[in-house]
Image (cartoon, rainbow over all chains, first blue to last red; front, top):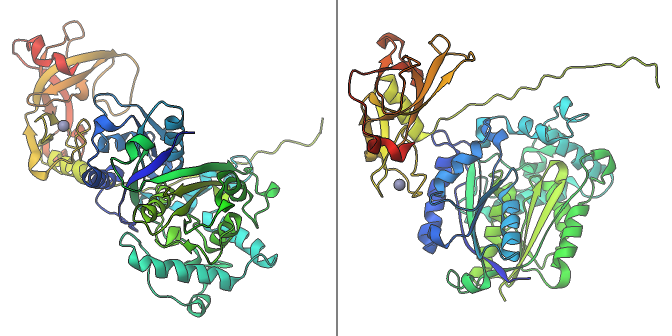
Length: 351
Length: 164
Ligand SMILES: [Zn+2]
């Protein structure tokens, strides 16, 4: 395996509704900021990979416009995934492992405010039996939360604790959308929006983008004195049919964490992309995290959820803790599909 | 085999969007509503992109607001095709000609239709826009009904060869 490290990152604010700019106009200043911070020029980039969803834009091939922010002449080596940018990072990492590239530029962007996100998300369900019922994403997550609560896996209090922690942490994150001091009692007094989920159990809907550079060890130190070396990188997918899955645990996160070697040593920082409080608990447990880990110092997905960028942003936030020396070992998580169907785990170390 | 009748149900799924054209495309659309054709100049190499857009796709730099360039409604055909199948919203009888027009002063081509002679249409032909009546103008490139040939000598091949 080649040593590959995350060496550059920039992100936009998580915004509930960007009224004027389109998707690529949200991305352009983030790309500019990354170039300014790192001095990156296109001739240094061997591979470009992006994640976005045409369903959010409501236009086929909408992702092509993203290349306006990259600069694609002279011709570049480029790929796109209809996935969160975290998976685009995985593809870039594989490309570097295979020796086809030494440095890659990766980005994710989305503008869900143009449509009705919970309904748009229904289109990722099984197209024969589930999707035609058109269940919204919050109701689907609520079914999972109810299974967890009724089976004794977790409680409403524990869920509220995650919202309090993450939104409190997000006070120091200038890009976060939902932040502040909340209390468990206060949250539990709120009405349900899809029983047993309250508003605070759900991540916000966010427009936004993030951009990252990864590089082989030889190039990494040109950008960072203390690169965040990727020591484990795995993603595992569970079946599409809810009926054959155990929705009260996150088996795929568990397997990915095991393969990535997450539990081999203490984890200083974890950044989780779970969009609902009960899912965050399931992911924490699957990763084997406890009080010794600083979980979601940025606030995680519950404080800002720029869909298609949020997972990549978790990796960028975790890497930043290694760059600044506040962590030696950090893990980032990204998810895709309903009820934590597919999960990605990225383990990074400073040494 | 089961004798049960097969039942079919239809579940129409519709997603509605509040589409945002974006800052630069909106600027273009507001201008064409006034009968103006707005391009955008790249601050790096000075090339003019039409319609105006948010950044240079070659140099990946944001276009500044003061880089807007108003272009004339005349130009040169750099390539064309004769269409023999019907299509919606085309104000011409079949067969008609689709053209790529390089507006004078622009560095990217505009796709439109030509009201011209099938036998004499050619690369280099000079053309001008025919607009809808002013009271029908909206925020749409369809404000231009079609292009028609100008009574001018053809453009020199060297003047448009980069844009084919
Ligand atoms: Zn340019």
